[in-house]
Length: 118
Image 1 (tube, rainbow, N blue to C red):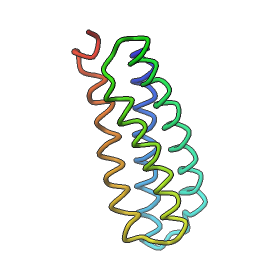
Image 2 (cartoon, rainbow, N blue to C red; image 1 turned 30 degrees about the vertical axis):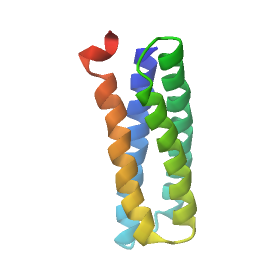
Image 3 (cartoon, rainbow, N blue to C red; image 1 turned 90 degrees about the horizontal axis):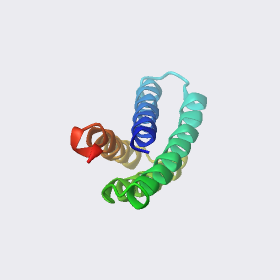
Image 4 (cartoon, rainbow, N blue to C red; image 1 turned 180 degrees about the horizontal axis):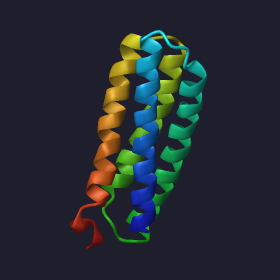
């Protein structure tokens, strides 16, 4: 179960990183709206998968519960990001993206620590 959570968390971080790259290209003038929109779908999908695996790891695997809580927050932040971005509110969208990335990195960092196996 821990391996699955690690993979899902790494994919979530990768999807959010792709979002950051395409957002930077958008701000720079490139038309990457389509890619950025599809990236949002990937963030939501990987967020949901990560949440389910974190809950199973917590409940069935007897792991800590905080990855499930952070995964839920990440999923909700992803939907908030989509809503704010869809309204064109860049002044809120960009800082929320930074917060999302920071929280997303916390899960795989903790999941890849040797203490996670215990």
